Length: 459
Image (cartoon, rainbow, N blue to C red; front, side):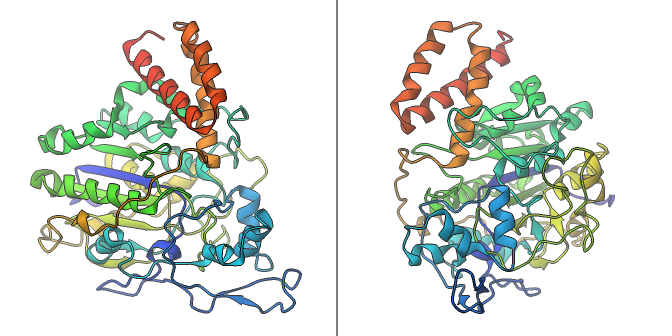
């Protein structure tokens, strides 16, 4: 680890379900070329088209939310990456009655300026154009790699409100390591924090704070701000801003801008901070860059001895990733990263020790933070949030698979809550039958109650 690393505070925001090509494929930066959209489109198999060389072009899109949501479970991602299958065909087979124009949206990308906040940051800081999700699969296992370097061999997640088929995730995490080393950390969230599905997090509920508190903390003394913080966006309901389809992508844009502006407004914090902006996985959207396997890239190795139906010897689809700091050049970084690269950086930085084989072998971005002799001053003082178009209303009557999975997990929390409020548990069990909106509200209440009682030592 370079001794002159100027970063004292690492801020991580992980959003949901978009590919690099879709969000950043149109961006070009000052120093170097970004490996962006492929204008030649994608070929599909002759079993699905009369002409096996039929191309579906990557075309600009203005679609702010795609409904229905593209599939991105492990089997779907493997089919999407199959040269004789593909992203459009997978969407077509999942939703055969959807019109073709909608199906081609999985190939779409946003023109430069269509995402005013993200594209402004991309043109002022560093774009990582070889950052891959950690495995070809959905949200849960990819987020586990960002927190712990492993998903304990699992590639799935609960798929419905009453699906209790989740696994025991009791592995050590980056938060465990930070606590052991005496480093300060917090998780800021709104609604249902997914990280609570990691059982060791139950020991650290006092480190969970609302997003309102994040903005209070950024306005305070930099020395009191946590050394590492992980931001969980709102995953459901009318305030959903995680960008998971079919929610409005501009709500995520607003959140990114609010976080940047809050950190940038505190000069002491800004000059010692790194804001890592990342997406968990591609969400079924096309990216032209084929993810490498272990033969091509030693970093794409099995994290531990745990395997289920996948050898964990290949990365997932490429995702958008930015490194934002006054100590970062305007640049495109072509080094191969995955979510464990963040763990590698943090572990090296604070001598925490690796979290599994994958994070031990991962490439770190530490060297990117030591290229400057002083902090840059040619960066935006604030991002103009008024440039965003009016936000579209979220429709809580339609739940994504990810929302279903969080509601499903909340049943486990309810088992803990039963010990002290049995009557309310029964009332919630009745309310959850009232449809999607009620299910979100009940699940959110379960998360909030659990965190409150656990922090008070009641359960």
